[in-house]
Image (cartoon, rainbow, N blue to C red):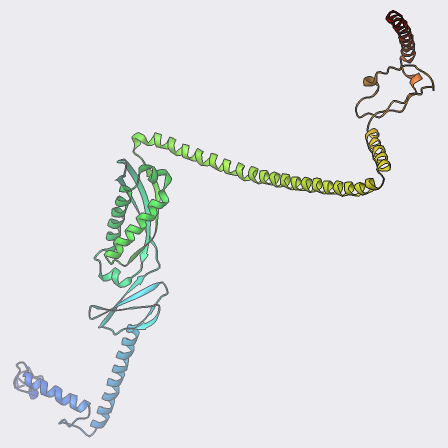
Length: 393
């Protein structure tokens, strides 16, 4: 018969567990829990059955397994590896603890936290601004900045927004350097030096604010004057390029001509030294020869003089042209020869008899008439002398 049917005495199946159907007493619940836990760990709790030992052993095994599983999960969660290009910033209970280097590491789960930072990645951004130069001109500068994280801890904790800070630092450094430079230096002459100064000043500002960032490169991509004077500055730029080109050509010419001139000078110096050595050697030889002849001359002056005369005539006549005349003995014929036409300087001719020379007959007749005239003149002179002598008596 069901409990809710007539005659069932209105008793539900759970009525034997207690008549009080209200909420359980808290103290009773705690006591019951303590009893169960005591029986689970083998304590002296009440209500143990003959099979209590088996229940206690199985409970210990379950707890051990649970502890092992928890430890394994904690170990898996706490183990991490830092890559070569990274650094891990560890916080313990929210406060900075350490920075770990590349390799395997372990942290305490739920207590320690980590933040992985890539310190080798190079970041890049561009910046463009109009600045006032030292000579009170306006220049439009476009540059690119490359940077990376150097100190991971400072990057996370020392500055609220390091990237925004580096933007402001670059603008401040560019304004300072531009204000100390002229327009020509920024546009044409000294652009690389301006970029280096911007990099240095930016890094000093980043170090002051402890941003943990390092600037790796600053490159000025473009620097132009205002549009009103851009054409004039373009002309100046072309003139500077022409100047450099001409200078390079002059340097190339100098590099070519100077070594050759030095070589020619060295060759002339060597020739002069050789000539001087030759002249000195010849002079010394002549001196020795003269001293040797002096001894011979002192022994036999006439013979030595005759020999010197013959040697000298041999040397002189060896290089000169000669005309040989076949003159008969006792002949008083005066021979006239056009030597300037017969003998040219430096020419060598075969000796020719005088009778075969052109004009020889006319020359001989002229010579005979001249001799006859001379004889008449001498005869008349003798007669005049005789007359003077008679008068003087």
